[in-house]
Length: 164
Image (cartoon, helix red, strand yellow):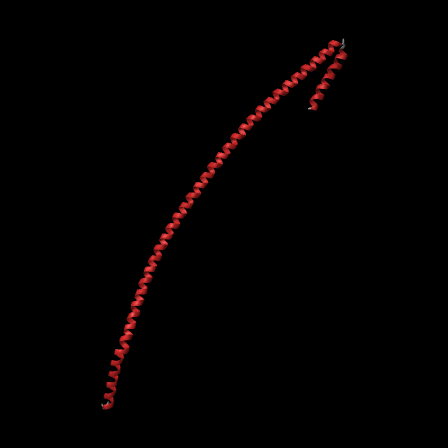
């Protein structure tokens, strides 16, 4: 059985005094530190949530700006491509026009030179015919002489043609 004596009462008294001292000097400050820590953690969580929301908003703004920039860049590229195609087509049209003009000039020059060559050939034929007629009239010739003279004229015509 338990015996109650002065020591036990003294130990109970010491225990209650120790609890009262600990409650006043250790327990209340410790509770205060724990409360401050709880408040700080709560505040940090709130700050983190606000930072997360701000980051999400910034990300959404960034993505919107990026989308807008991509659309503008695509519009610029499309415009440049259309402009390049238009310029290329204009250059092709100019080149085709120039080729047609040069073709017409070349054709006109060929016709002109052909006509000049025909005129020159006619003049040569006329002058050779006149020379043959003159020689025929100068000499009283027979058929052999006449053939020889025609052959000579033909050789001269061939020689002039080859010389060109």
